[in-house]
Image 1 (cartoon, rainbow, N blue to C red):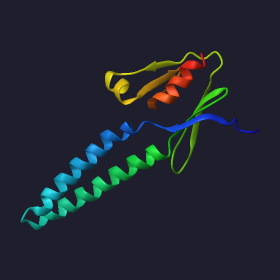
Image 2: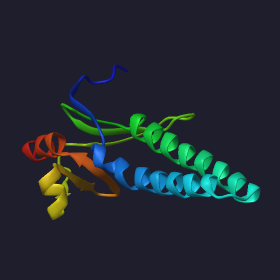
Image 3: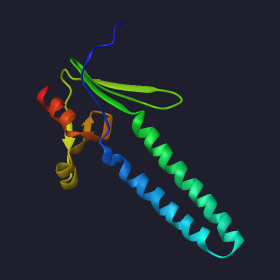
Amino acid sequence: MDTPTPVLEAHRHGVALARPLVRALTLALAGAVCLWAPWTATAAIGAVLLALAAAVAVIAVMRWERTHLSVTGSAFVIEHGFLSRRTASISLNGTVFEVERTLLGRILGYGTVIAGELEIDWVPRRLTRLLQQRR
């Protein structure tokens, strides 16, 4: 079976990275402060915190990079995963799509798409507009 050609493909909005990157930055700052402390044990804790900060940032970016959203002529498709891939799709024919946008989402251009059991956040405005046009 051939996969339908996407009308539009996108990643989740970049703001999806804000929370994990702020966590990583906080851990990195705490690690740097610990490294500057005069005690050896504190320096070891600082190194661990810096390594944890790097891991949090890398995992967040990898998750974002490996999540693909697309709209085909007949479906909304979400594909995600790194080691194993998972795909969820919902037909555009007869499906009720709800798009929720907070004030910040409206300003930055993202929203949450809800279609039946499927809910995906940080969806870019260009995809939500396309889904709403297909009603």
